[in-house]
Picture (tube, rainbow, N blue to C red):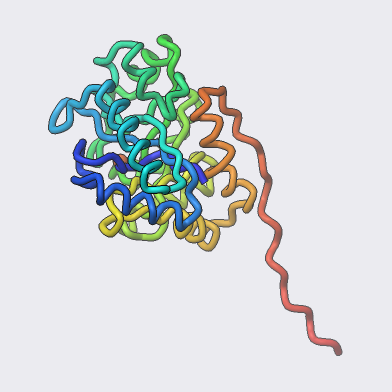
Length: 260
Ligand SMILES: [Fe+2]
């Protein structure tokens, strides 16, 4: 699996504070079948005005450490932008921390409260500059929780949507769980990612998130696999992403009627 959203890099945001903790988190991820993590530290205009160049350097040093410790995890650069931060960066900076360094897709989070009236403008401005947007965990936004249909318009404009494994498991509250399921059911969610912050507090848990989605929502198993494998791969390669139609899941078998 390819995890498109996590805070694996040490000492750069609210993820692990030491390299040892990051390596432990990487080991947990490998154990659950994650082969690639796109590292997405926060970039905002408040607490974490991190420079894209510093993320690229942090990925390089962690890559060397993983190799040294024989942890078989591939890591790639990325960032989790707020709407106000993403528009302030140059094209070169955005390309540097596009998801996987693929040059096209940017992970942008919605605020948890309220609805950002400028979201369409930001998406349009980025599109003109040659970038597409993956919206991070909109199920955690209060406004989407009240009306998941809000995502219809953004998806119609070409935005892709990532829901968080922990939301599907109910760990971000019942409203986030319901909204995440609703987005999946209606085809407004394209990727499942971990948004993991540590090996213990908010650990990777991607596999459990996929299992929770399969149990709660009637999504075709092929579609769920695409959300954590083929889809994320296209994103990291900077490809145009066309979401395949998987159709309804196979019907559950009814017990045979008793013979008369
Ligand atoms: Fe995040």
